[in-house]
Image 1 (tube, one colour):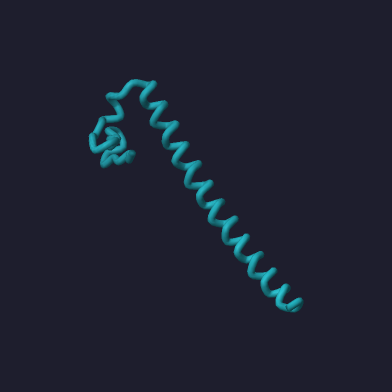
Image 2: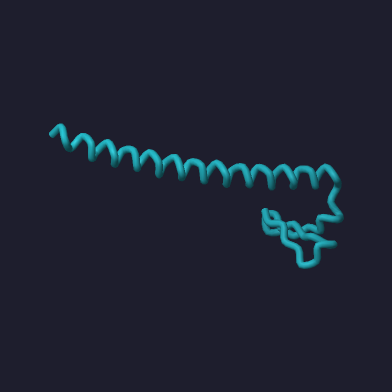
Amino acid sequence: MTDKSIDNSNPVLTFEGKKYSVNNLSSDTKEIIKGLKIAETQLKMHEDTLKLLSIGRNSLANQLREKLKNYE
């Protein structure tokens, strides 16, 4: 789903290969579009959080590996 507009007064929604004039959509449909945008934003945020957690976990594992070398 992409929301592209050349002219802000006539935004166009591209969904599943079809283009729709947002101005011609019902208010219910516009609310669904807003919900999808929020969901996409939240997914990106959580994906970034997972990446950061993974980096942190790897760093901790590397630190533990170094500390445990003293016990070999």
